[in-house]
Length: 120
Image (cartoon, rainbow, N blue to C red; front, side):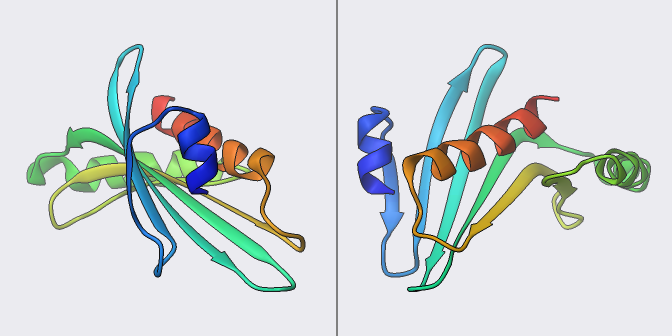
């Protein structure tokens, strides 16, 4: 993972013992924060990519937004958009698993899927 992030020229922070990596991305319409969690064994690997938006839903609107997110997620084949009810933070999450070791293509796909969900 670290090699991939360096190759992309992204500044990141990490907790490699826990398999966590984090970085900020500037998109055309604003910035997002991406958190990656990696889990691997000899037989499989999993990457979870969460893209947090700089959006916090006011408490009075959280029930309505929750229903809208439920409807959006019903149509999503891969990943979901979720809201933290405690503070109203919105994030998109994509999880990919494979029965082989993780490659750059899998890392890129998980990050792209999470960001695409967040942008839409």
